[in-house]
Image (tube, rainbow, N blue to C red; front, side, top):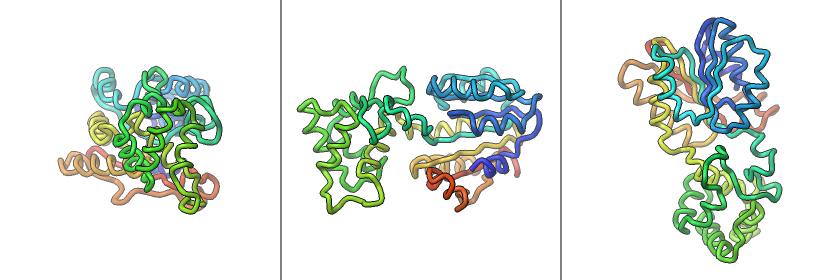
Length: 290
């Protein structure tokens, strides 16, 4: 939804723009080009590897650039200290970079056999395997149900606990096998791989992706200068709900105005060319009157 993001954020030459989850730098490059050489880009990402890729991809972009290896939840403190007058544009893209799935060693994909890692930040201590081998059956079932919307969360959690006692909860294949053994063949969704929702849920739980998300959005919005704009791109109902609640509460203070009564959705043309965009939800906010 690059065109919609650019239209919503209305970047001007000389703007200071912040990308809270830079990934490969696709959105950041477009924002930086709109801000021009007199502007500034501040890019955050908690994955050091992604940050290096973005920095390399943007070598030829003529703008002052600062790359920060940190979760966007750390952005408010960083910005208040270094940009006390505020910034003009903020983009928070909550989506997972597809390279995480392409790199089988990261353990995000159920398509191959790899260590059950799933950490966005590889400096973090706990992997998905470690979490699944220490969490209670109830905690696992709740995560799979709440973060994945999986109707078979209870049976899947039970199978995970049984298999971990046998030392069979170390790889992505171990987790896939647990899912297959829990869901009867006749009950499996033919359109979606049976492990899709479980893998999504475990990833969200391990990385604490929804933890304090609405507070983080609120705090980052507080770093906008007067007239500054912020956009959030969500791909999960929990992410979108957090952004929606944060924007609504900010607007009640009259200092902010919500730019999107309902989230913007990708066009059918974009979905056709990029099926991964199907679940995207874009919301916008401005500090002051629109």
